[in-house]
Amino acid sequence: MEPQVEAITNVSNLVSPSAKTERMQLLNNIIAPLYISNDLCCTLERRIRMSVEWGLRLKNNPFTSIKCFPTYVKSLPTGKEECECLAIDLGGTNLRCILVSLKQGREPVLKERKAVVPISVQQGTGEDLFRFVASEMKSFLDSLPGGLPNDSCLPLGFTFSFPCSQTALAAAQLHHWTKGFKCSNVEGNDVGRLLSEALSAAGLNISVVAVLNDTTGALMSCAFKDPSTRIGLILGTGTNACYVERLDEVETADGSEGSMVINTEWGAFGEKGELDIIRTVWDAELDNMTPNPGQQVLEKMVGGMYLGELIRIILVDLKTRGILLVGAYPTQEFSLLQPGTFTTHHLCEVESDPLGEFTRCRKVWGKLGIPDPTDEDCFVLRTVCEAVSRRCCLLLAAGLAALLKKMDEKDVTIAVDGSLFRYHPHFGRKIEHRIQQLMGAGYKFRMLMSEDGSGKGAAIIAAALSMEQGSCSANSNQSSN
Picture 1 (tube, helix red, strand yellow):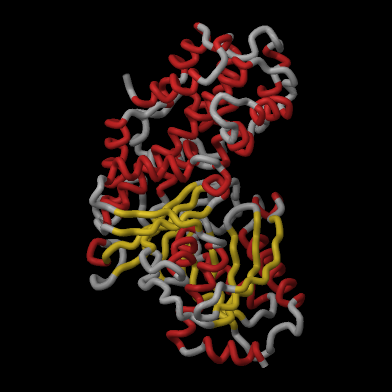
Picture 2 (tube, helix red, strand yellow; picture 1 turned 180 degrees about the vertical axis):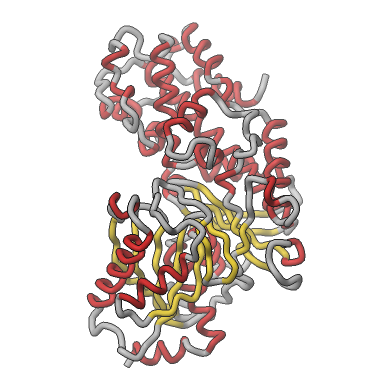
């Protein structure tokens, strides 16, 4: 018997005897494709590691789904950066304009302005998008007490959390849009240049010195406090990871000495069929509902944008098969028939219940228009949520173990950011446990929550560059006068 089946049995032992029926055995058989054995987890780790290695090679890169984009970030923070600098965080529907004050030995101080990017802008032209970003930055700077000196030119780090191919630290060509964005005339163009032009057109004297994604930002933010940080992981709406690689291993960037942060863009893993061995009919149905079928395969198995919808699809299937809410609601009146009704927040709520208790689970059912679920209904929902989240954790653990083995460093801190990791009650523990099994006793690692890596990380890179160029102290002195 596989360990994962034992886990289900242990949960069922805590449920009242009335819930132990043939229907529950049928449930276990139906959702069995969601479970990943130890051997299969090892296989996935090896496949991810091979895809990363191929992504670093010029000859093999076109044939792998993990592209491993160079970031041109070649040094990590020292913790001694002191500067006032700006950051823009565009990672999805939310935009943030940020002013960061860095002082040695102190926590970074942030002032920020938040805005929601309208759907019309997300689906409009690139010019409209960057004009909107520049307008928000201008409004933010105008709102600061005393404003900024007219002769100051603050450095800016731009967190742009979409797949990009970089040719320099501040030059990044958008590879393709994700997360529902479809702005025209941006793919294939340098987003650093587009932002610089928009800021200049808005009359702002700002120097875009770095373009990075939220994953690199998370790594830099934690490295400012913990010098052993070598991996950045994002687990929120989507997923991505970056890590520090020796330059002599990176054929897609110039240079052979030192190291560089590599943006894996591992959310695309599976686009070459690497995950077909665990892909279910429910994954296929979810994929067909998205704007980009066949793309971001791993992300659709682990990202917060998709997990709730995946669970909804499974629950509808179970209702149709007579496993869930039997006789209580006609299928045509079943509230979960509507896409988007079950969210990843509901997943976190359901799994927050102690084993054998269904207090929060019943509240979730109530929110879905089911006021009187049976113990069996609650058990089915809890079991499906656990199966989906467990698969998610195993996939992430396989990916992180692949990066740890690729670096072959014995003591590493993994910076983590993202709402799904932050708010799910068990993700951290489950991922750490499985990584340790995959790595063995000879490796030490720890997972450290990144506090606002998208803002702080971008600002830290901007500050480090400005210190190298000798411009940070001038800006700091001007701002303090």
